[in-house]
Amino acid sequence: MKKVSSDRVFYNSFLLVCFLLTSCLPTALIESPVPTLDQTALFATSELLVTEAFYQTQTLQVYEATSVAIAKTAAVTPTPIPTLARTRPVFASPTELRECNMAAPGTPLDVTIRDDTQMAPGESFTKTWRLLNAGTCKWTRMYSLVFFSGNPMDAIQSFYLASEVQPGSMIDLSVDMVAPGAPGTYQSNWILKDEQGQLFGIGPNSDAPFWARIQVAEVATSTPEPTITVTPTPIIYLEGSISIINENQVDLDTGIISPNSVLSDLLFTLDGNSYKLSPINGAGLQLFGDQVPEFNDCRNALVSADPITFDGIQSDTYMCFRTNQGLPGRLHLLSFDDVSDSLKIDFLTWSLP
Image (cartoon, rainbow, N blue to C red; front, side, top):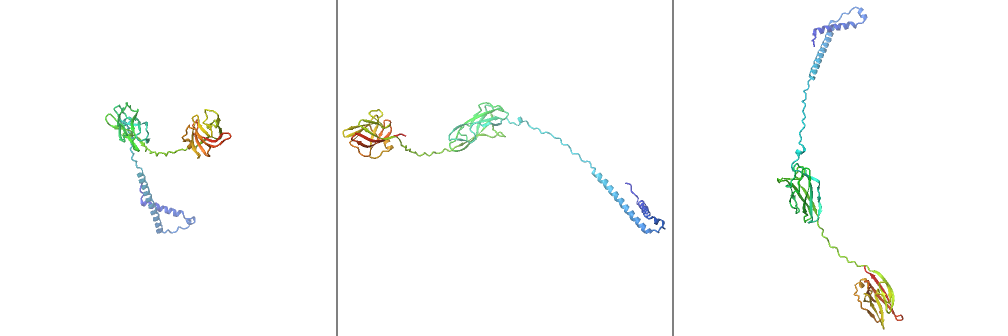
C-alpha cells in the first residue's frame, strides 16, 4: 500500500473543514457582512479533525496488514497422508493344518454302554466306540487301541486294529470289560497308538482319551418276608338232615339215599339191639365225641374204613367222615326211632379250598 504524507493529509483536512463551514451558513448570513473568524479556534478544530483522520488511516493500515497475514497463514498446504497398501494374509489350507494322526468322535461315539450305565457287581459287558480318522495318515493294522488311565475293569490293555482305516473313514473298536465288585463310579480311559509308539486321541489337540464310565449299583440285602400261614376259609358244599333205615345207603356228596349205589359213602344196618355205620366205596369214618368238630378237625381226622357199632344213641355224638370223592365232613347222630327202625342224622360236607 502507498503511504500518504502527513502534511498532505493536514492540508486536505483543512480545506474540507472550510468547505463545510461555508456550506452550512444560511443565505441571509451570506449577504450579511462576513464576521471576523477566530483563527486560533479554527486552527484548533482543524488540527483535531486532521489528527482523528490520521489515526483512522493508521488503524485501517494495521487491519489490512493483519488480514493479509492471517490469509497467508491460513493458506497452508496440508501434508499428504501416505496410502497404506493392504496385503492379504496367507492362510494355510485345511489339509496343511491337519496332522498325520488325528481322531474324532464318530456318529455316535458310544455305540454301546453310554456314560453312567448301571451295572451289577461283576457284570460282564462289551464297550464299543466309533472313531473317525480325521488326520492325513492311514491307520494301518499296526496301529493299536491301548489302555491309558483309570480303571481297566479286567480288560486286555492293548489291541491291534482289525482293519486299515483311511483318512475320512470310521472304525468301531470294542473292549470286553467286567464291572468291579464294589459299588461306585468307574471310568476306563483309552487312546490310540501308531506304529512308532506315538499316542494320539480325540479333541482339538488330538491328545484327549475316550472312555467307558459305568455306575456299579449296590446290591440290596433282601430281608426275608415272614411266612404267612393262610387258614383256608371252609366252604360248605352240602348240609342237611336225613332218616335212614336198615340196609339204606347214603351219598354224603349229594345227600341221596339209595339201596345200592357205587357213589354211596355209608351203609346203615341193624343187628339186634345195636346198629352199625359202615364206610363203603372208599369213604372213611372217625368217632369224634361230644364236641362239635370244625373244618380243620375233620380235614385232618384219621378216618378209617372200619364200621362203627352203637348199642344205643347217646346225645351229642359226632363223627368225622371223608367221602369217596375226598371231601371232609361231620355227622351228628340225633335219634333212633324204634317203631320205624330209622336213624335220624344231620350231616355237613365241606369243599376243599
